[in-house]
Length: 78
Image (cartoon, rainbow, N blue to C red; front, top):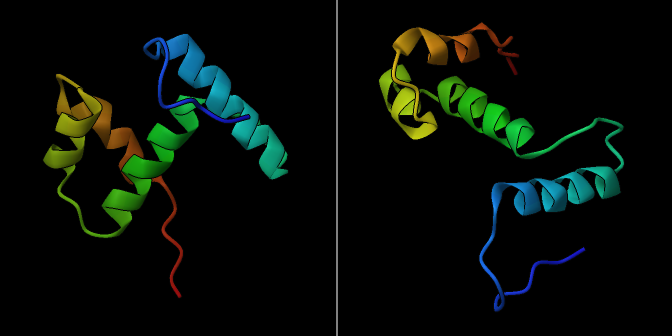
């Protein structure tokens, strides 16, 4: 499943459908959509030292406590 560069604009439903297809094709045995990538991005940013307020802005959360859920992700040490 590939996205065309030209054509009609993307809607959230279309993008979620495309992402779901890629997650399914990856074989990771998880259901997924754009939210899966959104959560992973936020968690990885925090694990790598990003400021929580910056992540809050990127996610579009009006309140900091909504973004704080990503701080509860287990960080695995190397």
